Image (cartoon, rainbow, N blue to C red):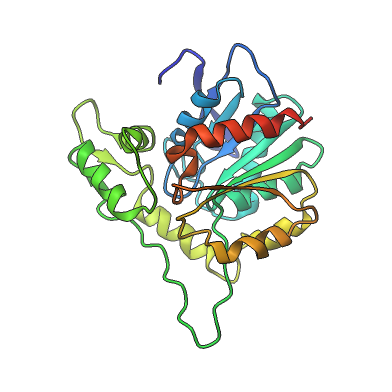
Length: 286
């Protein structure tokens, strides 16, 4: 942790423990954000954005089965959303903004649908947006589950992300990203992903199944609060071809910001840009 504005804790929700980080600035300039991480990370993925924005309170939980949170053994979007709402009810004021990255954009929209009186706006960071398969064309390749699960050094972990994630990672950006999202065994131990391979496989299997309730476009059609969307220009999960169909799914067109140097993690790779746009967006949200 880099500041005394950070607070950490755990809450028991439906019998299992949820860890959270809570950025509480001395002077808040907007409604707080409930920030939900993607399937390849944990709550630490929001550290850089919270500290760069500075004046926005951000409650960042480790979602079920990720980071330091326990895994109750189920993966429905509705249950992820209920976890988030329960934590917000305990720790946030009556009105807040819900934020999601990657697969958690579906969860953020579900939170907005389930708690419309509490959610003032939704912020979606590089959602995983499906595109229709061209007739006779190949199906998009699935995103591979990362292997190995641990690395002997931070430098090895950095090399893995540089080789597997698109977009630019300037300066010390990748070092900080690894330090913020990876788990470490002590001061000198190996660096581990904040999830196990079986946990990630189970989630991916559910989201691809007929029982999945992660229909991003269906949720978008039902949301009525203001929406801000960030897309990494080099993202493989939110392609330029998917941009218009996604925006058209909303009743009112969201504000879209394309982050020119980013892949799937614009809130980490272009944190100053994302923080500036986010702060200006939240000025008008009540």
